[in-house]
Length: 79
Image (tube, rainbow, N blue to C red; front, side, top):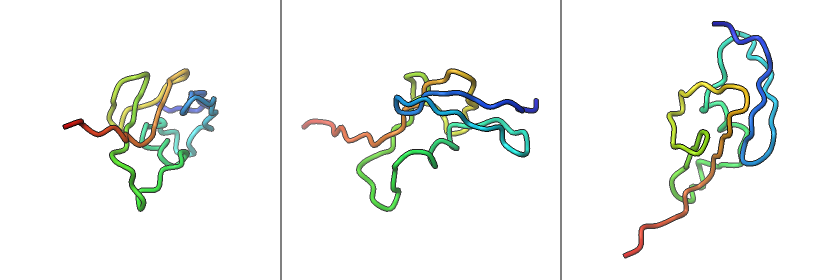
């Protein structure tokens, strides 16, 4: 299906409105990487990507009202 309307999501606690893609494709979780302050050249652990509180595939399509959290997972297993 063609996605012709803008998409309103929550990204790291802030409301973000994503304009429709020129080719009509859906926005994917992967597209959100460009909108967050993560520098792959300066890693601080594994990147953790949550969609509505669950770890998800980068290829997951976003829908209105989705809650996306992207950040460094700086937790280290103890011991």
